[in-house]
Amino acid sequence: MNAIDLKNRSAIVTGGARGIGFAIAKRMLASGATVVLWDVDAAALDAAGAALQGQGNEDGRVHAAVVDVTDAAAIARAVAADLRECGKIDILVNNAGITGGNAPLWELEAEVWRRVVEVNLVAPYLTCRAVVPVMRQNGGGKIVNISSGTPFRGVPFLLHYVTSKGAIVALTRALAKEVGKDNVLVNCVAPGFTMSAGVEAHPEVAEKLRDVSIASRTLQRDQVPEDVVGAVVFLCSEGSSFVTGQTIVIDGGQYFH
Image (cartoon, one colour):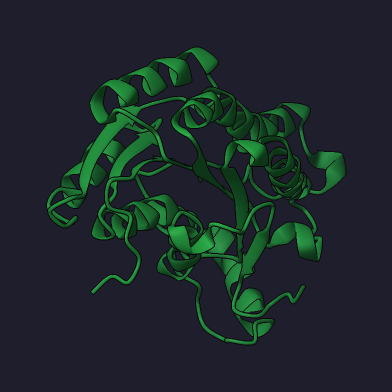
């Protein structure tokens, strides 16, 4: 039995077609929320939507929309469609992100840097910019941004990714201060190296990071997407109604703060 009740809540999960985003959506459905998956990959989105149909209780429903979260116009259209379908937006989970590959600074192409920052940092700004006015009009809401444990450890050869994810922590804190008076709560979750479908599709990445990540954790096992969802769903629930501007690192005790 799911202990957290999200009944009558409407949630958007970006990058919801796979990995951590999919796991979050699945748990939210089980908690009674209506969940809208946004993803740029239409085929993966269709598969995710089909897999989640019937996963919720009598209250939870799932919808899916192909959305490029770096495109402000596409976001505006998707928000309008979500409002027509669901009537409101209570929750936004900014999960969509990319790594951009590994490279030392002097080999890191500027185009790659810009693309990673665009997806990982500009896109959450754009989604918040579109959704926050809706939440303010509705009397409040919950935003959870997905960062990474890497900014706290200073992981090398991922300068573009680490910088973008560190900026998400700063965005979370500043936005929380800005919209707290409107009862819009903004928090952040920072996962460690997670064995998601996206990572497993790139074995060269998993090979480099998997063993060293496990060895440096207090809980020495693989991290999987389901390890992240409990904190996210808590931050979207009534139980976190006095929590804002915070970052929870979920990495099995690799970093303490």
